Length: 213
Image (cartoon, rainbow, N blue to C red; front, side):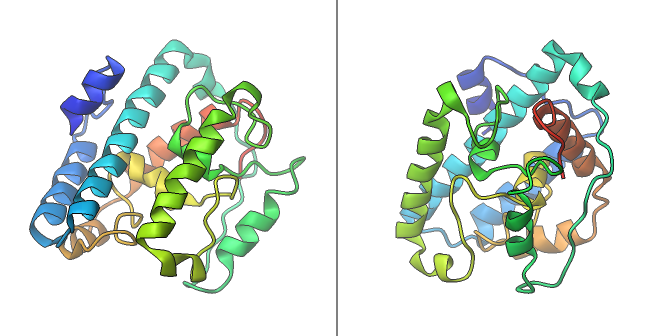
């Protein structure tokens, strides 16, 4: 998986000095192979998902190497939304995205293809990334039609922390899509500090345009 991402991007810096990223990826890959019970379509989908995550991680790291000043971006007064499942946190998160003067919420299409960063609501010449994300969602809806009754998914929707933490292979994002019980058990016992550090890096990239929540 990592080699395929390196071949596509021409990049090979994973920014993983403590090894926490690759350990997470190894645990996830093992769980998918041994426990996932993937159909042929599921096997293809899982590989595409991981390939997208890995190529984006490489691009984010390279962007930060090319633009080190981005990490000096000061994110003031971040807002944290917490709640139990099905309590309306996603709805509230998407509600805040309309207050563009005070909040900066990452859009789903951005997390699918974050580099180069641009305005999330008016991507201009990068609008093809929005269409690409929506096309991928159409495939997802066809595979799992019942999901839309539980969780609203759209390219311009605000996305929460799980897809961002997935860039460090330490996220409940994977548990919501795949059957990976050993990965979930492993994840619950881990320190999330390394994944949150990468979250901060991606937040800095996006906050070039507007404040981030």
